[in-house]
Image 1 (cartoon, rainbow, N blue to C red):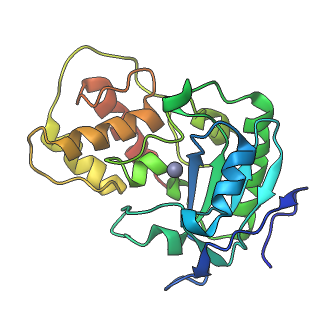
Image 2: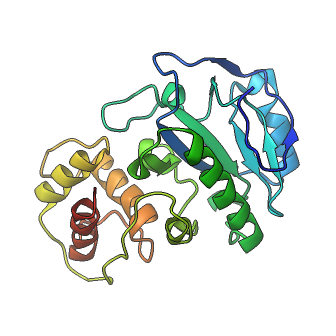
Length: 239
Ligand SMILES: [Zn+2]
């Protein structure tokens, strides 16, 4: 069994199958549970009828529970897209970070929980060929359906510990900018967005997902200069 070297609990989920087309994961997807308690989330993720699972769950006090062998395909991403890949479950490791989510008050993520999540990510990244720009939010790969782990999740904190791709966001601006260029750059970066040059539900959802991850001070789906400049800087910082 492939597992973290950090102290952790086991609650193995039956909702697994072999990875298809991937010997090793190349993506790391972060979620929040959106449930009242971590215990209920673990139970749900281990129930056959739920048809969902993840590799790890990080509780509010930093406790880590492993539910799926890293070598197996967990069912956490659902219908999703990143850089042309639509079977994200086969390509990824999924971590649920317990938080009640937007529907239940959306509390802050405690520092002890962020530290545990960061240590778990560092351990996973040390053993798997996952590039920084493939450490993503569920909302990045399923922007029409998902908002987790949301704009309160501290991607800067992870980046300071060597996890993921991130640049300081440009300050908020009250203007609009070239939507065609924004759609093109978002697509280049990996998002599933069509090049219409016009405002569509998907285009707005993808811009909102980008803002949640990279410019969280205002998440409104508007193609403003600050969002575009942050995106340009992010792409410019790719190695
Ligand atoms: Zn999720």
